[in-house]
Image (tube, rainbow, N blue to C red):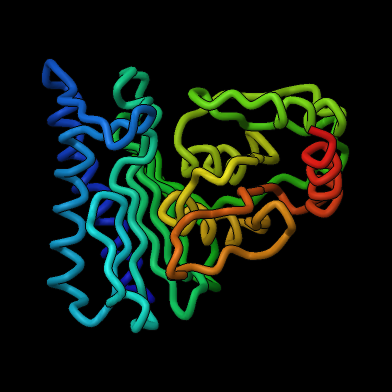
Length: 270
């Protein structure tokens, strides 16, 4: 998968540079897909660039991309690229820099390649199956692994900056977690976990899609962590329905089952 990984990293960087042209231009050019779901010209331009590039380089592969019309063609493909061209659109609009380009490749439903790139900091996380996870920052590349923390009271929870959730707060209280850090973009949250700034991320709603998960999934796995739904099941990619109906749970894996049990208990009581 070396060619695929290099392609994912290169396209993520190039799409990031394209996004920054919009980001540093006055006006965000915002439209609304739903009353609560914005999309910008930057989302669409990055999506078009990544999809067109992948179709040229891997014409037999399927594609599932947030800003592209989804069709049944991908369901007949063993290999499917799963793309979020701008994860963290609300953070992009707020101009706080916490957004990323996420490109993943799933083979027979399993993520095998992932790249997450934060354009505003020029930080790239990437991984391929069986070869570890890495971060590139300030011209240096290093391998990343999750923390060894096993005590909830010593763990740090990374939470959404734009999506505060009372259920997640109660899960935190039940586990006895004392610290939390806010961040935009699922990919950047997982970045905090693989760099040991945080230890877990919990998303209890059914509003995320597979493009929110594919690239971060393989990066966390290769860093030694666990990425699952709220029942502990792995996310199966390239399903007919792209919604993650049973939420997302990303952790260093040390007490993943305990987190699941507490999460189920809190959800059942609400």
